[in-house]
Length: 127
Image 1 (spheres, rainbow, N blue to C red):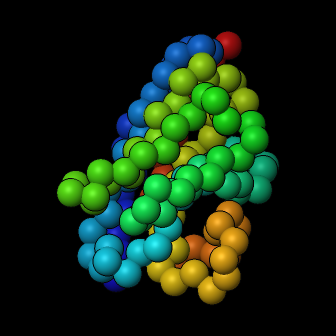
Image 2: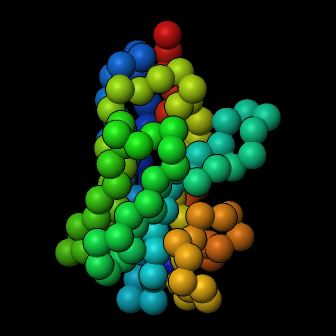
């Protein structure tokens, strides 16, 4: 019902920047929240940043605050993740995810909160 396609990953040196894009199609009108997660080898998938499809509320994990910015362009059905001052610790596969119906007032930051996922895009930061 909702298709998500990520792009923009690549290889950068520490201190560099990347901009990820997530294009949504299908029943986007049913989407409440779109977020970025990441997963490094041997690590659990973790929440990075999220934004409400309508409205302005955003949320970030502490490790990326001040460096990453999530934004949206509703006309293009696209969510962006601008990543600055990248560190080797940011190396991971980054996934876009959509939550359709929130059941609680808290901001969705758990993997189980989300209904649809993109295929992922690799981000590698070298030292």
